[in-house]
Length: 78
Image 1 (cartoon, rainbow, N blue to C red):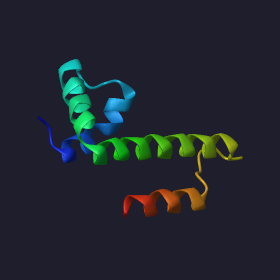
Image 2: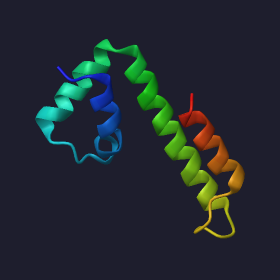
Image 3: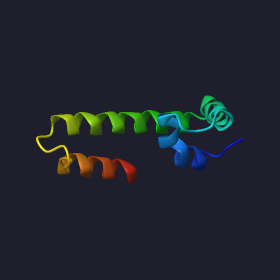
Image 4: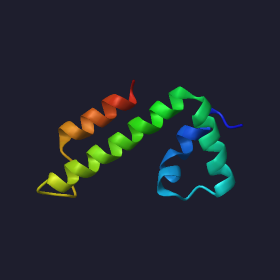
């Protein structure tokens, strides 16, 4: 069984679909039993969605709005 820290390390790859199937099953089994990791994954998904929305609305897609950057950094400190 994997630990929460391993799930956190693999989250981006998991969402991209690049985690090998056996490890993906381990991650999903862990999340089925760990509410904290389910919440972490949901928050990560929301953060990615918000970042994409902000970049689509930005007049300069190469530069994320400073408020967005600070909000993301603030959520990571919690």
